Amino acid sequence: MLYLMVNSYHDYQIAAERASDKTLTLLMTTSLWAFLFGVLMEWKALYNIIFNKRIKLNWLLIPAVLLAIISFIPRVYWVKWFSNDIPFFIEMFLLPETQILLTAFSGLLFIRSIDGKQN
Image (cartoon, rainbow, N blue to C red; front, side, top):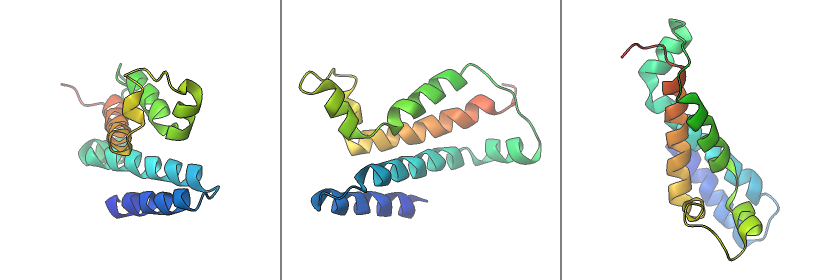
């Protein structure tokens, strides 16, 4: 999974140097791999959801979905929308490392939000 994510990001860097029109698709693919990596980090909960049908939604679903939506937006659009007046809380989405980490974290939160485990 990590190999696919790094490979997609490497392809994005090559496409960005060549000014290709595939850059947005490659950024979305990298975000998708990061989200799936976050989901697989909670493999026990995922196993219980799939095989034991232990599903119970909790309040973490709302921040997980919001963070996933925000982190899937490519960096190009953040710059286009905010131009030079980028707020400090949006700057974290301009760095590829933090965007990938937040996307993986949103996948982890998503699985935790639908796991029916009683704490």
